[in-house]
Image (tube, rainbow, N blue to C red; front, side):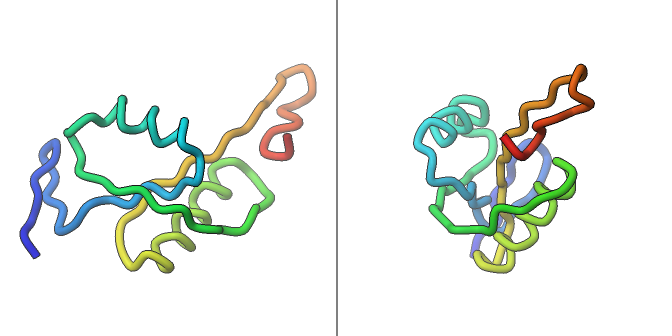
Length: 91
């Protein structure tokens, strides 16, 4: 497989953006443009609980195992300072 150079990095294959949301995919395509080669894949990963960073890290780890390569995941949280960060990932 040929290596692809993207923004100073050498990738041996495209990054897989794991989403079933067409709007998220459209947004990522707009942001990344052609700078990083990627493909999208609808993949069911568990809805995890915990801190936002831990949730994203574990989703990426599980998706990478399933895909067998590099992945990009996205998770949304809504945090209010007056509520000490709640509802956070539980919205």
